[in-house]
Image (tube, rainbow, N blue to C red; front, top):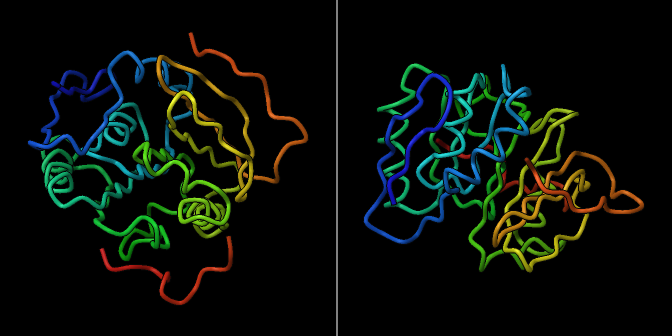
Length: 219
């Protein structure tokens, strides 16, 4: 698949992809639908692109006016492509590329103070890990850590992608604000706060205290 930036300052710039099927990037069509909905909010935001792959969503956000982005990716080969893309396209922007264990990280990289707290988070786990989003599982606890006030701003937005047949359960410091079924996937738009009394109708677009080992990791 050929990946490119589809809007903003870096429009049409191509992204390097690794010789592996470890990534599942947003297609141009789906990305366009997402950014049609959030484009007016991006100016000056501090972004976290978690399970970032080669950096598609974070670089697209920087292209459209975001202030900074922390890219978090655990796969070695994918991370190499991510670093190449960041250096080739957004080297003059405020960024941190961070290879870390997403199941255990604090989400607060050393040297990334300027990028915190995050205002917008893309959270895009591999589909086979989505059951771990349950409150007491690894990714549910990760969402809880992301809700901490020293990690995300009070009005932060988190965009979670899951398979179309997966039902996300509100919890972990985030509530469902919108739900967008698109093609074979679901996008869940989450805002900080307790679970709502009733999850919103689907619409189509146009944890615990942090243990000592989860204190800020080295970049």
